[in-house]
Length: 255
Figure 1 (spheres, rainbow, N blue to C red):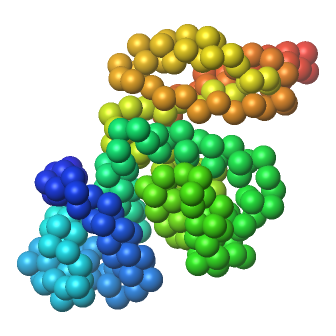
Figure 2 (cartoon, rainbow, N blue to C red):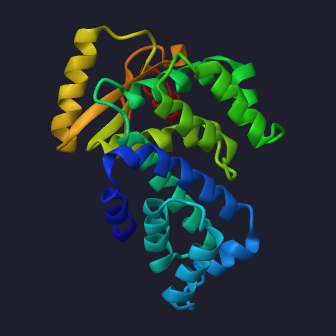
C-alpha cells in the first residue's frame, strides 16, 4: 500500500512513462541476482537500499525513483515477491494512463481469446523455448495499430518476463490488476456456445451485486462444457456446467 500511494502521487501525464520505466527497472532487478538480494534484504537498513536505487537507477525520472524508493523501503517475503510487486505497479501505472475511451480489460480479453484458440500464437508468446525479446516482438507486431498503446506496453512486457507463469494464468493475473486499478473485478464466463448480450448483462448485474463492486466479463466459448456455465470470479468458481454434472453422475454410479 505504501508503494501504491507513491504511485498514486505520480502526475497523470507521467503515468505511461513511469510505467515503462518501472517495467525496465523490474527487468533489470529480475536479471541481477545481486541486485535482487540487496533490495529485498529484510535485514538491511532502508536507507542503504534507497542508496542502491539512487545509484543504479539515477537515469530514471524522479517519479519512478520515488515509487522504487517506496518499494524497497518495505519488507518483502522473498526476492521474487519484490520483482512481482514492481511489475504490478508498472501495470497499474500504464493502465492508469489510458483515456476513458480505452478499455484495456477488453483488449486483454481479446488477446487472451486469440491465444487460447491459436496453438501457434500460444507457443509464440507462452513457450519457455522462445526468448522474452521474441515474445515481446510478436505482441508488438500483432497489436500495434489494433490495440491501445497501453495494452501493447503491458502485454509486451509481461509476456517477455513470465517467471515460470503459464501464459493463461499470466494474462488472467494481469487482467485482474488492470481491473482492480479501475476499481472493478474481472469474471470469466465459460459456456458451450456464445451468450447473447442480454444474457451477459444479466450475469454481469448478478455478479456485480455479489462482488459489491463493478464486474467486467470475459466470455470464453468451451464446447466441452456441453451446456450450462462455469464462472470464475476471483478465487471463486461457480460451476453449473453439464459436463460437471455428468462427471458427478459417473462418480455416483461408480460408487
